[in-house]
Image 1 (cartoon, rainbow over the protein chains, first blue to last red):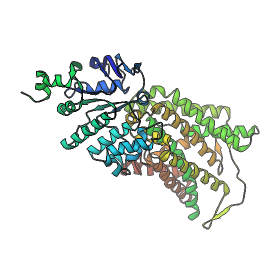
Image 2 (image 1 turned 60 degrees about the horizontal axis):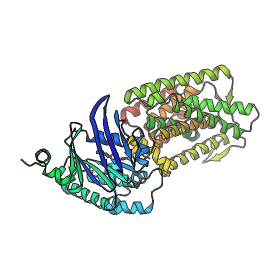
Image 3 (image 1 turned 90 degrees about the horizontal axis):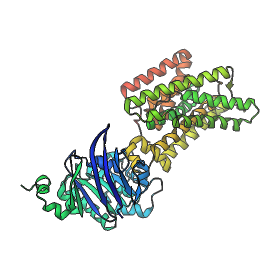
Image 4 (image 1 turned 180 degrees about the vertical axis):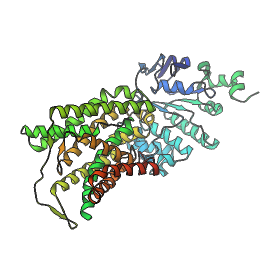
Length: 234
Length: 286
């Protein structure tokens, strides 16, 4: 059984659908990339899956249970953590407070905190600093770290490398790979396709709000259309 | 002069508590609760009626605070629902108008049913000498309660898990949802808290002067000024603003006259908005 199952999902803004009939599934332990250009609808799909937005049609199942009409905070408590591209940190709270809130409504366990700080030692150095004063890369680490505090089983990341220097982006994917090896299921939306392909097992290509292609990363890499559009191969 | 300033601090601590309720509700829900003062008076009148009926003072006061808190909660769960479905300016305007309506209704019902009711709590005991100023026990008790409740509130918001959840919704509602915080639950909680705090302020005010059925509008205006000067959404700002404005209030009342104090307070608010649009401390930092 798939851990996350999205079926014929349509969603948009102000009554106008931006994504149409999107279906995909993610099995436990998988790493999946959703690629597509700016405006293809990746963010809308993620927002509809995690409950920040009501889909106009279709269904979303987590562990076989429907979560389509559930609210975002409820879905978060069921083990699905979403890291939006804009990060949505609490800028006037410290790094430590942001992490604590990630575990809400429980108090964070010391092992969890140690795991997150081990993954992002920078956050330990900045523990008492306000989140709003962190650099872009540090804010991204904090956003991922905060999401991990709830001990999620499924992590959705939207454009985790936006605005990051290439070395920082590579470090971010190194951290994601480490998380995968610990058994976390990860879905990542990414415009920097080589980075995503270096990380994921399978991929979906989203264009104009529809899934145009899907398959194993190796197959997608060999696809001439994908090469032309996303990998810079002439 | 010193005695006047002390009186200002006594008053200011209570202003602060009144402003805190308003500022939290605005920060969380985008609703300017124009019925804040009416909730305060409602609580006071419930307490007064209980006392008239023979209930002991403390249970009567607690009943008043509980009723005001419950009315706050019910307003959030019913009348405010359509408000929360809107965004931006729409939400602020609809919230403003609905709460203004609630203010008129509470005022009207209280004046109609209990026109001469008032809460006066006489605190016995001799005046106490503090730094050369003789302070009435009523003033001291009122200040102690306001300080104590304010301190508990600040500690709660800073350290308690629920308190952090409240701040998280003020700072980034979507971020809070992604952490598993339900904004609707937090809002309902804070609406109830704000009603209870308002009633508590009416109770402490009644220790130094009677709180009458038509005092609601004065409380509301004070709460508004305090919240704006302190920065809407800022708890420590509201307390700071409350104390400053309390001192401004008593000093101007003493040296110029009571009739100008509201004008001077509004003037202080206007100057703050011009010089520091986000208030003394800015929102959300506790």
